[in-house]
Amino acid sequence: MTYHFDRSALRFGQISLIVVLAIGFVVGIDAFIYFGAYMLGAALVAPRFAPQLLLYRALVRRGLVRTEIHDEDPTPHRFAQKMGFGVLLVGTIGSIIGLSGLAWGAGIVVMALALVNVTTGFCAGCFVHAQLARLRS
Amino acid sequence: MLTRIIILFVVIGAVAAFAWYMRWRSQKASEQGVVLKHFPLGKVGVVAITTDDCVQCERLQKPALKRLQAQRNDIEVVWRTVDQEPELVKELGIMTVPSTLVRDAHGKVVKVNLGYVDDRVLMQQLSIVSAPPHCA
Image 1 (tube, rainbow over the protein chains, first blue to last red):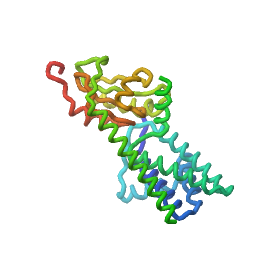
Image 2: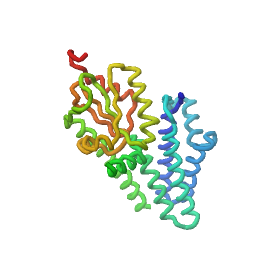
Image 3: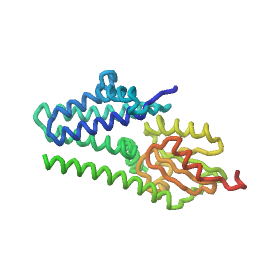
């Protein structure tokens, strides 16, 4: 099966999330975590309503950002997005019940892993798999 | 707010240090000159390291290597699991999957990629590895 996957859109989404979470952390407003969770959730279930993708498409239309389409299965990236969404959801719940430390702990983890992925292409889940396999052998 | 800015810089610094460490490990492993004696010699090739449960290997690295082979049919691609090559994994300091080892026709590892790498990068790496005349 042939897939068409835009790596530029993925990178743009990751950078957008990093910026949102970094600003939210510095100004100390928990709503930025809710917004981060919404960004990832919307990208997964309704990309038409994902703000980072709307912005990306607008920038592509104006020629300010170029697409980078590859024949690539998006499943691993979607899995990573689901993981990020899950962690930010925990952060959101933490914030709602008054655990701001938990909320921003989750936010920082997602931000750091997104930053690692953008800068090195390193997959945290794959690292865990490899270490477990090494321990088994 | 100052405390939060400091924490943010610490996190960014840690990520930058990790990115640098990954590049350093990859560079160091590439310069070790490890020879893969138990792989068929005479052809340049790629050894891909995986695990049984590596989704990224199956969904990303494998198609990338197929695209690579479609462009260069003179190369040999071999898949090995971490369990099958524990000594090699330890020797080269492979810490994640997928990892790819680019080897010359004599079996010498000339490049180690830790993490997913696409066919374009592998093509560039293979272009500097030329088979000796008697093997061509």
